[in-house]
Length: 412
Length: 172
Image 1 (spheres, rainbow over the protein chains, first blue to last red):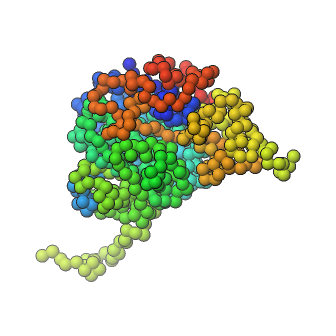
Image 2 (image 1 turned 90 degrees about the vertical axis):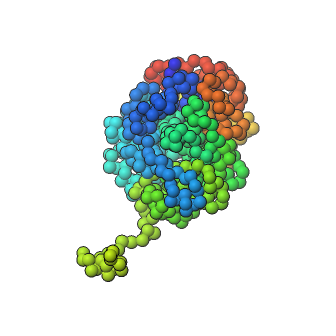
């Protein structure tokens, strides 16, 4: 029996074939891969995983592809850092950073979902791939499509950071900059996807694509010595990453690879685009869309499709959601860099700032084993901190000028 | 007629998303008359019976994953279903693109740890807890089984095989 049984509607349970489909025809609910966990459990063990490739493909039995992976063979297995300096500063004894700023090849967690999505897209016979993106996804789809010889269209909001636009163009996809925000891009792409037989990784391939995010949870548990964290702090854009991290931990528990740990799942948003945080705060279970206005453009989704599920995951696990201002985001970026030597993009600033806020408020216990997910590299969003990180010390090329300017005392 | 046409005769273009095209004879764009979003949707139902059942839940609210736009504006930013339309406006029905929730649906349990079953390993199939999903839909007559398998049919086989052998939702 194969590991994937069907696509199943999350809302009404209706089943569909394992095709490029993402919406239930009957209730518009999202479709999700239904696995045969019995079959997976027979072949999966800690030692089998540990003997696998040093990439996310070591968890292939839990990923929605049928054959050997063909795209993104080096994605994943990023470092899990014991963040002692940051932990000391925040009063957290067991703080870890899952550092996806160094994912291969495009320096964000999107290399995970794209590795899975494009492998699946090729299995399904597509020759053209596309995405709606706030930047990182487009970078990753563009790079992987180049390597996999796939035709590529990426759709982005026209006001993206220069680094993210350049980080598409260099791979020579067709970059479509839409006059509007991400929600406009997303809606346009939904309609485009209805008319062209393209693999839109986060639209018609989404049931497969989104599963790639589970590997962040798998790796975390393995890197902690097959233990789940007590608490995870995850940025929320669409909300998918957060729900899939929880699902990943759930799957490892179900398969007996880790002991059941009631991991608390907490979310991080920017105040300028915090519809899920607002709903959490208000005790609502529906998300009121907002028009984003934040420097954290990679999280600037005003109408987060998985917001409802993210909210539910947070509430069910006893987590919390907080939002931070643009100034706090910049401080978060600088704090993480100053303490742990990790240069995160704005989303990482959001996560770090929320982590600090929750620690300050006592919402993370000092002794909780906490993992914060840092999802993209700071070189991509340099605009955000330009002007707030000081300047170089300019000198003439002479020892005397050096000493005179810095007023240093020579070593004896 | 001119632009001063009485508003109750407003005819607008409606963009139909792929999952609904089975009900519109495959058409991605149709026209419908009405002054408000609500009236347009009522008119759609008259033209294409079954549309409203897809768009509204059993309490009469728009389903969670249905987004409606008048021109480029999400109606949740305007007057919702009461948002008015004028001649030449376009109404788009667009499914939200969510990725799902996590633990398999049939194992859903009220609040507790991971929301999944107690640790008991790999014995239980995701299907064998049948009936745990929310009974949102009743069987839908002719459209039922048009695609997929009825939710109540436990573990009914899914046709396997290369996608080109399956009926496809994509346009050519």
